Length: 410
Image (cartoon, rainbow, N blue to C red; front, side, top):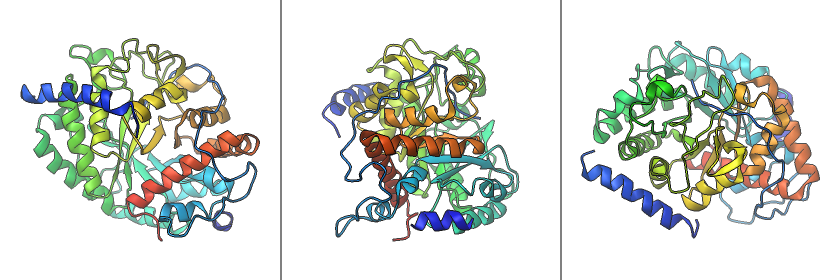
């Protein structure tokens, strides 16, 4: 791990209309009483989207020092060379059963986060000790993420972790009781050093279609079939997680509730119905209003939004989230590593195209892909000033989220 430490040390005008419109959906529902992720196959353009100008020249080894009085995130960003900035954009899978050994296997790649993949029954004390060992190895603290949704999707079990009911069962508690339940579960995560939950699921699955919706409905991962009900549960869950110090990651924008293909296992996931004013966007709008730290973008195709690109490679989809819903936090990709839907796209291109579209964190459950992704991102940044600015912008957002949840040391 010595090389890792040495190298690392070297709002919007469109938001109001759509959010207000979707809020009417939520309000109407309330007054009436009301493993993971996926991806779909096509190649994507590598054209970088516009980004705020950066003072760092392409190929430079460090950004200029931040101005006096800059926040901790900006101070930390000012210490990172290009490889360090790229590293903050990578979240790499390590085995939940042995995170320390998994992390050692990627010691030659700088990463800003790890995802505990698979399942562990070791319990809170063992996971907490392993996470502390990981954090001791890095100068910039890691974002440590799990899939702790409930039901069939629960990474961590054993002493110190309650068994969680499915999202469908959780929603039956009602928002107040759900918030109380999630508060307890989130406290268990935080006590074990977990800093991010890749939850809650904000996808709405239409009633009667659950069995035909393999990524979500078939496993009861949804909170319901009414977007107002889903929005209430999402709001409660985001608040409880984040009050306990665990960043929420609402997924899978703009929604997987209507697809009939699981993008983890196949290609062709397609939602022909979702539009920029779709009622099923209401849970995501509610999550933004609740202050969710992160939003995960799906890899399905949404022809009425962008017929030519998977959502994770689509500036149009990211702009819907940023410009119309007003989200200013961290955009996370769905898994770009093992998902069959991405098998036709070269590994390096997956990372570059996602970041070019506006994604901040590239998630791969395959640790042996981390080096390829890091190299591709750095090489593109060295030759493309616009892309270099995108990298700096995203690294700044990642660090700002870490600062928000008390991870940075300054």
